[in-house]
Length: 196
Image (cartoon, rainbow, N blue to C red):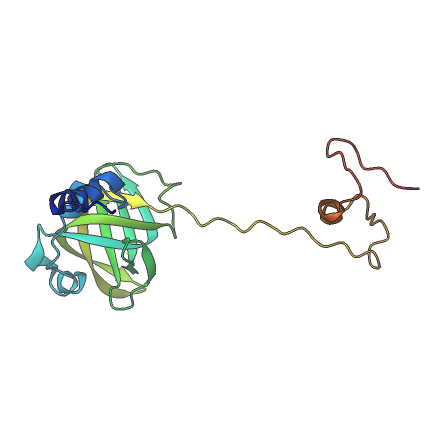
């Protein structure tokens, strides 16, 4: 006979589930909840001065890394984010922005074309010449930043050795045949010996 589960127990279990699972967002809980969800980047890009002091969640690809006495400045090309706030694709309507921090970031880690997710406080805008044309960059002060790891390079697959193409191919030393031959015992620590 099945024992009914009290509703209070189910409510407590659902309430503590996020605590039991843990915080899996790339940024800390305090940084995540400091973001204003009612303000979008397009609104800030249209009029940065009207949203000074507002915190946004941003993601993109680093285009330039500049270090100075005041800290580090990153020029970031804005990307759209997935539900884990990972940069996934370039946002054509977003453009680029400047992210500044008083911390000296490692130029090797925060190099060009690396993907980042960050919280940024709006500090206004700055006009710079891009290929001779003035461009207004929204300026953000970095609250917290997460550098995404580089994608893994695919491991090369071993080439299949064709006995009709490779004159030095020996079926007794081939690792592919070594696995599937149930009648011959192989010693992996002993050097392969030819039958002749």
